[in-house]
Amino acid sequence: MPMNIAVLDDYLGVSQRLADWSRIHARADVTVFDRPLRVPDEAADALAEFDILCTLRERMPIPRALIECLPRLKYIVVTGKRYDTIDVAAAAERGILVSNTPVTGSGSGAVVELTWGLILALARHIASEDRLMRSGGWQHQAGMTLKGKRLGVVGLGGLGQGVARIGAAFGMEVVAWSPNMTAERAAAAGARHVTKEELFATSDVITLHLALAESTVGIVSGPELAWMKPTAYLVNTARGALVDEVALIETLRAGRIAGAGLDVYAAEPLPQDHPFRRLANVVLTPHLGYFTQEMLATYYSDAVATIEAYLDGTPIRVVNLPQDA
Image (tube, rainbow, N blue to C red; front, side, top):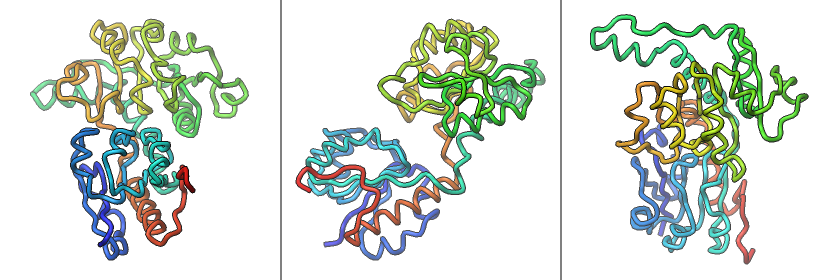
């Protein structure tokens, strides 16, 4: 009996076009799911007959409750480096291997570019003016020139550094903070290290680029939002849980900051009735940060190579080991 492989959350059906799956199709049956599956019940029913799951980043979590409902599951491939949403310990207990894929390829600048797309959309009211023009309007809001303004970068890893460099090219003053940042690290990225309060209180644009961990959940909440200037913008292309959504919604509704640009959310896909969808001072994108043809081609090509190695009996990039190994 051939193995059954599920490619999860391929909403646009691009996985089979952007990578060469022909060698996999010759050895296994591949099913593409183009919609989200509710976890655990719907996913348990839909995936019960599959041996291998291929995720797209962290779109669908695979917790213990789901793993224990999948009797045939032997292998999970996570596209991308992070695998926080997979219960790797529960998988190991069942003898299920989990592999990730490297973060290389031609699409590696995608998140930085989208971050600046959101910043420009906010500063120049691009999205709202586009909507108004389509209904017959003309010039409703004066924008903000970025040159000479202060850009606050929260987190100076690879993405934060890329955003900081472009901020400097726009002629902005770049300041930075993170829980473990030093003045030397900030200076090496072309930024000036400041305290968290100073960054939030004095920046005209604040952009988040922290990894999600227990220590960073809700790192932007009521106090940080209260520090912000009423003319300032918040941009989040990192992880939705970094921001207390309830506090942000209250702040935006009250007009205590100028607006927000959001690509990530606590619940994804964003529920139809979510308040963000009704706020005029928010620019929303549906988690497009990494979502380019170049980046997806890299993810799926790496997934094909990883699955093929497993089928050959030589799994690569395994991030857990079964307890009986």
